[in-house]
Length: 485
Image 1 (spheres, helix red, strand yellow):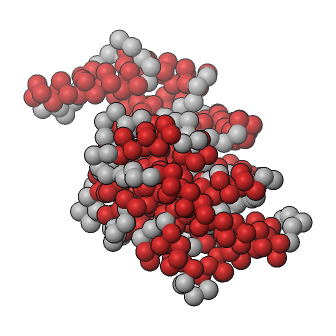
Image 2: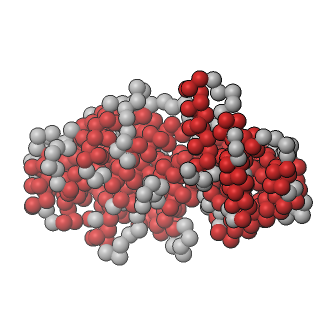
Image 3: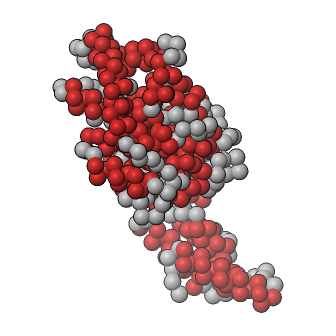
């Protein structure tokens, strides 16, 4: 069923176009139910006369497939569907002769576990380049007769893999195993059941990366497939697993939960997994589907509803920064940034953030923590600079407005108590850099130098062990504050 674009040369179309990757992928899609019913691949349908006979006798399956192929191929072109159907029928009429030619070329050769390498090399040695694939696939189709499940078929194919297998010899096995894995029925049967859709995604990605650990419900042949993939190149198998990834991501089923944040985090995890290093499993299509799934979850309605759950502006900003760290795609990132812009567009945003805390120390820590969150974020530099400057100015102006250092120093509290308050602020990131940070350090240095500071700091510690623990705590706190010695 050579359903690809026809070459200008009918001879080339008949001889080489019938087994192209694109032709097999088209067959895999439009003949899926028939292939799954017989546990056969597009390559077997192309190279086994008995399967072609059964297909032609399966009601109107053949004519339906031809029409689907023609419609798909003339879409967005000036070509006529009727003309394309006629061209496909011409190619179909040529197939018996092509198969007879492949059979004659294969002669008495036969593929077995013991003779696979020898047989393939014999075909390659005595065949012209355009005929090699057809003859090898013809012999492999005969070898796979009688497999009554996808697991049995893959197991029989992998039994042909041996040490030292040349790339050209492995390529034929890779093609057919990859075609098996294009079937959702095959994948579901091989991997077994799952509780969450993310589990299936993880299994597919693990096998693609040859890191799959056999699960109790999975077929044992997957362990063997994982092993051979770890030891060699299997591009067609990996492409098929990428296509499975596309099928899973294209569904509307949640990966883990209908909960907004849980689902977004799961999507973010998958995005990072499929894009490790320099490659993306399934290519640009995978990223497109992930962005589309994110867009469905990250709707304006969902974000707005979630923000209403947090009356605190600090909590709302933290939620948006959390979202920003997860989302991918320019549209999704812009949507989150627009919400942040909206919140900071409030002229009283500074006062609202400060009013959410019940003490000066908590307000300083809250503003500093928000600023640090923006610095850690992956926002565009221009946006990051804008918001960190706003929060930095708010922090500095509040310190000056309440005269924090002067008020603390004028309190009647003992030096150890004042020092503890400062060290707590240092530990929680309550001071920003610059003059205020140095002022806080100088004030702390003054307290620890006061007579009787150490005795007061250790007051209440019982026994040598507690005193030593208190001293270690003091040393660590001073180190955190940037004070050595």
